[in-house]
Length: 202
Image (cartoon, rainbow, N blue to C red; front, side, top):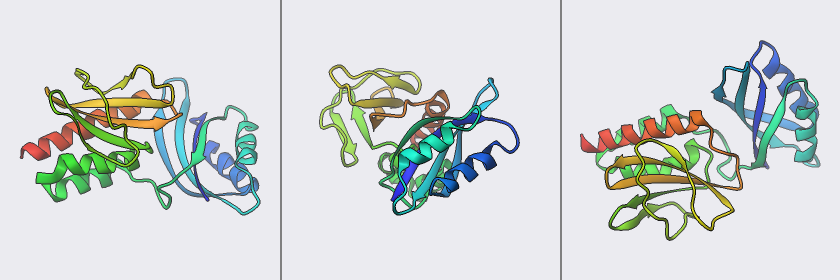
């Protein structure tokens, strides 16, 4: 069963090796790792895609990681996409293959790129447009200048982040329960959405 582990660890040589050893000893097999964020406090946040051996428990992997000095597990959950992590470069290549469909394709690739549960386009006048499976059927348009975390009244289950396509349309991605969208993820989201809009305009 594939799992996605988001972990904060010291940004020093050998730190990732110690983490990998602990995961392996607890019954996890690492498939891919992506650095999500490096901050000024000497720590990094990584997403680790791993397979859990039969009989091994995700809780054991979390405990093994948290036992390491300076390591903190932020989030672990089953990863429905499985297989690998879809990186930003792959998303850009995908968007440029067919410029006329770049904005539609953007909605399809964002959940994979950001390990989110769904993505959706929302128009100021026409409301919800293209959406992936699991996206809300009704989501209000929000005026935003740059990529940002969004609050949706009455929804305690989802975490939202959105970015502006143009003055009349935004893209929103959502995660059920977590983890929180990091500042680095918001910057990447804004960049990808802006790039897709430029590609679509030709």
